[in-house]
Image (cartoon, rainbow, N blue to C red; front, side, top):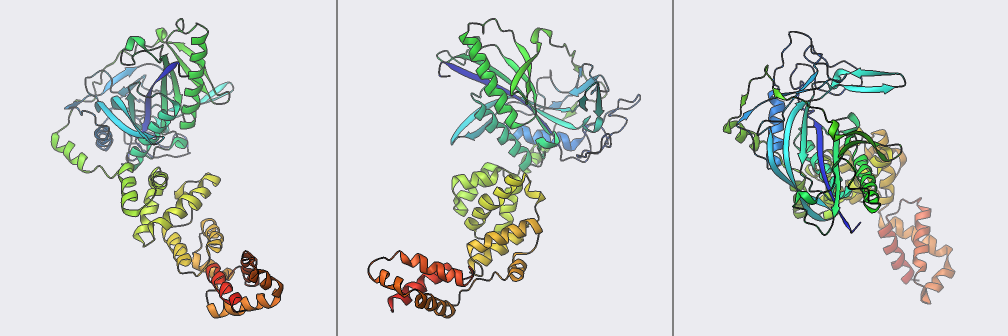
Length: 486
């Protein structure tokens, strides 16, 4: 691997989900399992229908362009990308391609991977309409037009990534940006994120800045998950290196491949010499749009605190570790949940520990989203207070946590129902400690003779007698005091 350098470029497609309607029609822009529910005549290309631009979609696209440090256009054009496919009723896609500046060009994004900050140059960002979705079966296919006309952002990077880990870290950062700005839910399970991956290799001792040293670019189309991106890149790197070692790499033509998830391999689709001529021209039914400086300033002011800013806040103000802060800000909904617990008075470190360990552990195990759980931030704060007030032990708290998150009951109600209140009355614990000592006089002698580790056994007997309800700290302290009196 050290003999070769990998060059990876990405084309990331993300649906803008936070608009009421689609980009050029009045059809609802929301996810539904019901096929062909969100459609209008414009989406179906009925004769006599005309597109109308969704201003909110343009606004969100421009916001993304600003965050990516791109140059914004003075005038915005839309164009027709002409090709036939069953998922494209009009026979063309309204997009942005050949004009000098679409939504944004020539930007960059800094992101973190394995503790190191990397920079990727952005070639362009453009706004277009999505196509319908096709489901293929044995002998026939079905088309769902709900996705047709959904506003879609396509982000094109330069080949500045050098490993699958870097590519995935970049995509995760972009997903975070889309979520934190409410541009998109960016949920791959809903088909809102797709990615084309370009991979090539070159000799590591050659100059990367000279394009003549680059290897043959292989495009992998429509990878639908970040895990798929990782696997596709790793397979393609291995495949190309094997061709290089066998002396066949130079004969390989530029081509498009697809990633097969079942086999974990990329499969040839077509040669680039067979690429379609899309015959772009300006969309005649959409006039050019003037983008005023005042509007751009308003949009810039509305950019919220992003994940990296929240992370810095959590470390500096709340004293979280870099690791915990990174885990929390990775998902905006988790970060919002965390901040709500702080607003309700929770200790920042305690809340972080419960969220990163117990809460996210449960979500990962059950494959749930934090929006799906029954445990509200208020309930988590109540549970934290029960532990800090020594009403229940940390061990009991885990039992209460599980019941709360699965049943949706208030922690204090669960404590009452199960009789889990912790015994912190020192006089009561003194009485029980002496009962234990009376029953274990032989162990007292061992303690007097230097076997101080027997305290653990004696404290365990207190916990047994109280069915785990005794405060462990008070039980240990009391036992030490009482055994010294003997």
